[in-house]
Length: 333
Image (cartoon, rainbow, N blue to C red):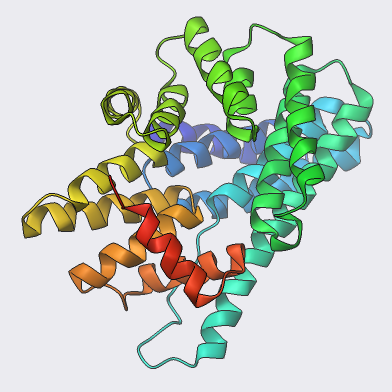
């Protein structure tokens, strides 16, 4: 599969040498690089994927400058920027034992700024595409996902209820145009702050397609929060069997292993929680990771340090509140 992506991209690069002002070649190159990067993300090669997406972004920009107001070009640029924001890794190559705290903080802030810059760029491109083709449901849905990512990373907007409402409205706009789109229902459920609407959205998505791993994972989270461990386990098991790259099933597995006796299960709990936090850096996962790391002796590892720092930056909690939240994450699980 890797060879096919590489060959396709090389062909577009060769075509570009012969026709350096052909917008179709730039569009094809950007699309090929985007597809290749998504393949790399599935294997965990996030740095490689980010490098491919940087080239794809440049190709999409040139294509937009050559074509002008074409909705598909602006959407492609938005897709590339959003993909970059979701996969760009924090590189700890410069972080060594005994490093200055300010240097560590600056490194993390630089990473956050890069993600926010890409996400905001994607939002602007989607808005441009939406202005040109307001009937395209996919653009509404992509905009909702992009806005949700921006406000999840920006602590200044985290507690503003009107901000979260915007992503829900964009998601509903997509469903108005395509009410039987299973992916749109998953998007709405993942962004809604209303429990009943969340559950309804995921069940509706599963009515349309029983193999939707994300819907099963989110349902598992809902059942776990409501205290129904059996339904939660069944939902997480279904999600893991369909797609092992989702965060919530790994977090659920981590919580289960944490309370079992034996060193091996605790180590498995740490690895599962670390994977969940890396896939989806939610404060709940990051706090849980710190709790498990203290028990396994991994508290000072770079992977744990970055997740704890991001948790403090995202939640703006003081130490007492963090400890209370830490105790509640794995209590009665």
